[in-house]
Length: 82
Image (tube, rainbow, N blue to C red; front, top):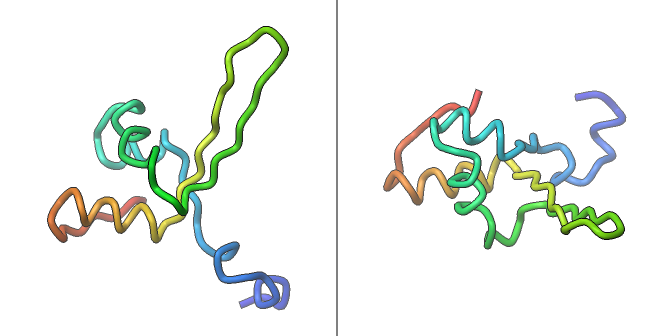
């Protein structure tokens, strides 16, 4: 591990996925992927809003959370996200 990574908190060393990546890996729609993660507490949410436009939210899902959700949905099945 590089010295730069060694000083980072553990949660920043983890891989984060987009909803598009998860939807493609799990062969589901973007909306279905969003529905699975919308209430997960460890998901990073970045809100964007421009004047006179609707609010948009970007999601980043930690690998550990993606695995937990997948296991919940498949009753413990395994799946490689890559």
